[in-house]
Length: 408
Image (cartoon, rainbow, N blue to C red; front, side, top):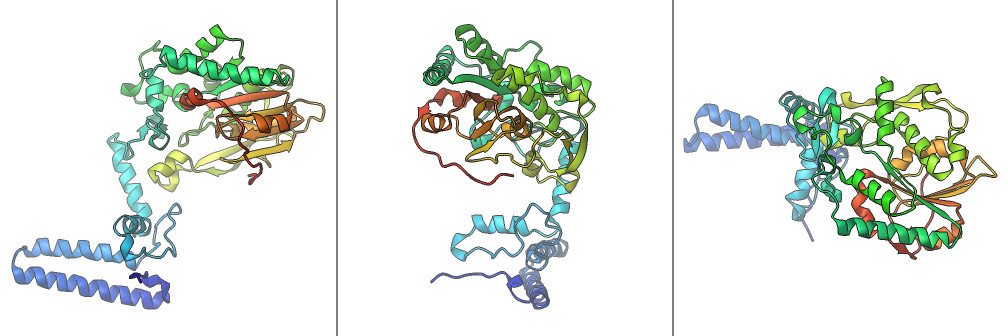
């Protein structure tokens, strides 16, 4: 068998507290006696060591106290002895007493000195947060922004070759193909970066490089509405992106949706009201993905807004995986198939009114079997600028991807 160390809070709470206090006090007392007997540590230092040890053992007493909503420590059993030290470190971090207060203090300290406690993030002006590296996905959004990683001529040829093959496969089925590149927050709000982090004016980027190359060497419709976002950004007091998230908010998503519609169906795009004419209301609070990376305090919650318009459907939004299909609100409209990423989630509520059927497919490949089954009039490849390297491996696949999943 294996030795299981069970958290004392598995027992009645009052008994657990008394037992933990007794054990931590006894251990601290014995440690003090040992240090005092050996005369190796002066009394003040010994007291500090004992206090530190007592604080460590306090984690067994005050589990969940001020541990924050983002932790999952409440009720989690301490890991088996054989799984130390990594799992114990995670367990203790989640159950650290005064966790939320300590994280908040650490954040304020780092913010004061302009130091990001997470290497993947950049602290901007007015508490704006930006992604520097996306280590988990092998992305370098900040290098993309600076223009340090332009595509090579061979990479440009490879990407265009992949897109051209997709266009040709779809053209044989009478299906239009177009590409929409969502602008990342770094490119729209670079004025909120610290001055020393901003790129030189006029610097070339791989996004502009690719868009120009596609337009010059093919007839594939491609849209990258950065200039449109720059113009709207000056008009609104409300930001177009969340300050503490990688994604755009309701305003940015609507502007993106109108731009995308000009690719997919220009006539329907003309029917979409101008964003400045729409009314919106507060719909709860939003805790951004970058704030969660920072373990930032609850003060990082941002207002979440929704437009008040009868044609917008917030009830069916695709999640971050799988393939989802549902009927639109325009019975005689076009059928559309989106190859997409998470930026489509914000745009989806504004698109249902302009198509007869919508399918959202999360995988940067051309799934010919699903497209043949779906019979769309148009296929839109939607991709945020930091994912562009994925187009180097964008190819036709025939494997089956199950439909379904949770609509949120």
